[in-house]
Length: 274
Image 1 (tube, rainbow, N blue to C red):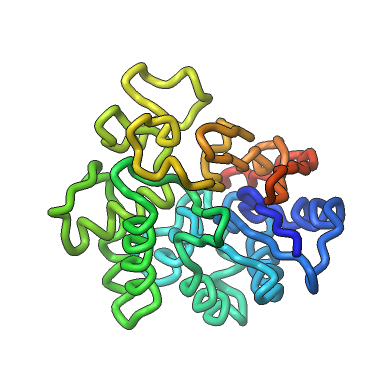
Image 2: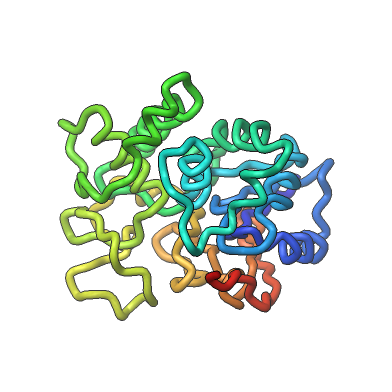
């Protein structure tokens, strides 16, 4: 079985189909690992959700910040934003089925060789802690109290890990790591402002995967979220969001002892603000 990890789609459904044609994807023998952000900003979020859901066990998808935003909007805990392109999902006849399916997706997926997540891990978490923290949020998302979870999900605080974090503060920090982080300071304090190219960030900020003291350096991690970073390999971590939405590329990374990258060029599909 071949496993292909695929970067942020964000509703660029037609490009996804072109990429799958290029890698000659076989639903019966291959598996796709999606790094999250299936939806939003692009033109065909509804078609993207329906298609990936239809793949069944041939597709694994972790949640990204735009996926969580869709759920928060649908459950009336966040207003829809000017740049959002979520309305077709919110008015679809199968909306509830799609949202329930999305709510069951994990934050963290792994096999014996690789880990999959949307954004990053704080330096204080080893593999066991990452699994434990992801499971806490997943229980909230899938349980009867998910409405309460979305009510408290948004916010930039706390921005640093502590074993003393509890309740909604702990859950919010976990979500922000798995779905929003790009850089942090030397002590692991998260930054939520910079999203530009690597090397032009403020001097005190370090990409999360380049922190020398992080406890998860032994993990091979596949992630997306940082489109300005593009394809990047550093310290066992592979960034595969190559900016399809913005006219960059959509990337599939064939996982194995020899990693093989396959990409297609994209025209860019961000829907203009109305």
